[in-house]
Length: 109
Length: 113
Image 1 (cartoon, each protein chain N blue to C red):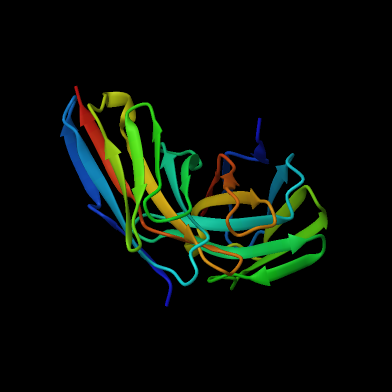
Image 2 (tube, rainbow over the protein chains, first blue to last red; image 1 turned 90 degrees about the vertical axis):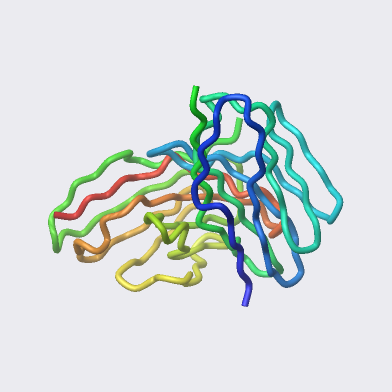
């Protein structure tokens, strides 16, 4: 059965303290691995798509990487405005994405 | 700029009422989706549509129906709202390929009293 698991569930960092969020997936015929940011009470906002193992993408303080079993979202020198829930989703050969339950990130000033 | 617009940000309804949630996308996407999001359960797919008048059940379709009369518009209908349908509802749209990005609306926070 297709599955996406994110860890940790919650993470508290001091401003400037770099860390990584994990997304483990078992999806038949991966067509894409997606990262979203979601602020409280709002819809998910697209961040990155990764399509094949070894691929990396960067945006400001965020870098996403992909292996055959997992993806990482690395946050370098985070700021309080990076506080949000980060969602990982995987697209297989069917119509739907499989989403993880997210990592709630809190960055303290 | 990509846009998925949900008609209401907040709704409060009474048990037994018929509720309509509307979603419009401006990207000419074939696929549109309705999810509900609850703490600890993540995003759960209710229904999706791959073309006008075409729909497929997702993981939790019970108590819901959908309508897609025009390509840009996808409606979620709660035939008789119940308190366990209190949730955040998210609409999304996507191009034809499963590898395309799925874009989300801002969400509708529905409370059923």
